[in-house]
Image 1 (cartoon, one colour):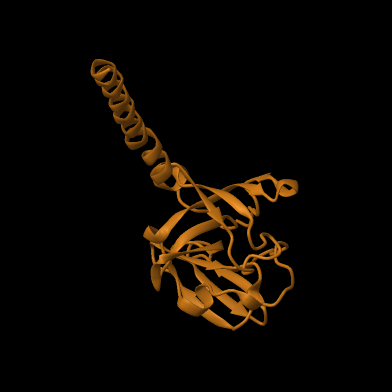
Image 2: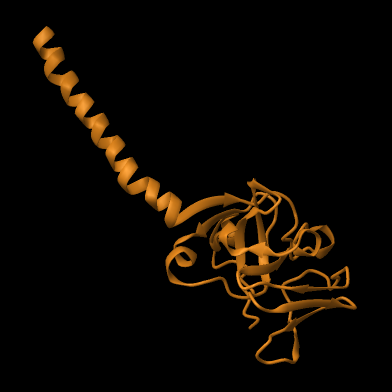
Length: 189
């Protein structure tokens, strides 16, 4: 009986070691560099997302292929407490100036010089306060929630450093009746 235990216990240990190796070399890099789950908490992105929506976040694109674009919905570490994660929409890009005046969002690009008003059909109600001007550095973004009345965003805590961006909303998996690819993405270049 002791030989039987020795023979199969050694095999079980080897299987555990193989399982740990697979997790360490395949699953962890995918989770860290490719994609991760994210559950919406709160209503700052309403009507685009509701509390408890379940998303998959694409980390690969921003880590290896490109930078965020205006209109994309991104997940990032909150600048004032990096242990918390927020989800917001990209409004202003590096090097631009964002102006909020009389409820409208205007973008000033140094190259074009003329202000461009954003088409924000994705927000529930047109209510963007306070008026203000935010000049972005070369590695900073301006982000806002779609539920402007109830969103803690760049209007209150300033620009978002690029190195705090985790990824973009790639897919909504819950609720089932709202499964979507690139949920909430808006082209507003």
